[in-house]
Image 1: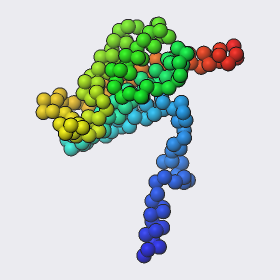
Image 2: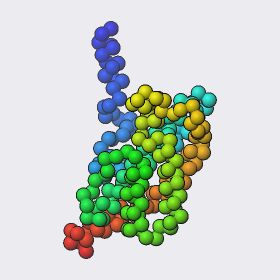
Image 3: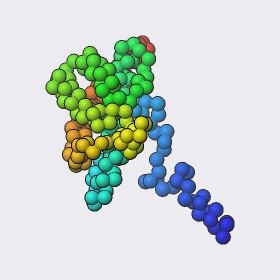
Image 4: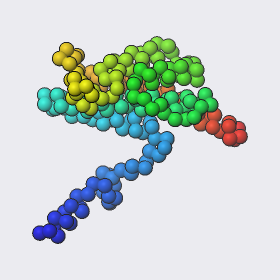
Amino acid sequence: MVKKIGRLAASADAFVSNTDRWHTSWLNNAGADGWCLYADGYKRAADLLVQHLETTYDVNTVVYPVLFLYRQYIELSLKDIIRDGRYLNHQRRQAPAVHELRSLWNEARPIIKKHLADIPARDLDRIEGLIGKFSELDPTSEGFRYPTKKNGEPSFPYDSPAVNLKRVADVMGELSALLRPISDMLSMCRDLESDFRSGRR
């Protein structure tokens, strides 16, 4: 019996390579520049959860991971923009060590305005408004993860707003449609700048 249990445990190990390629993923796919891939993954996971809601219990339990996943998508997207912007500004290409979305946007917006002057101000205002809603709900990225704050108070008091997850998914689709081209264009600018600095132009 002990041998059978041992073999079962070994075969049930999720973190091993196997021949089931459809369900096997390699964690090193992203690499050091995989911020966009990580961000897309968090958004995609949230989208899939929302698409498969079936019961009231589903809605009232997955609301927290869904909102965290969307928030994490925003955070990583902004940090990706900032990393490229810092490089273009001749600074060290690294992400800020903060989680506050407003702080990240306050650094990202001037970068976008400087290096992508064709982006309409109304698009930047819309992005800022959508990010602001998430920032109001969960400023530090803890409210969607824990039921209480560090001081023991509820993460979301009794008068917190209701959340329609279908509407949130739609809004995140809009936000993604605004952020993704910005990220792609800044990435292209970074590559061109890198070629210029290395003397390949």
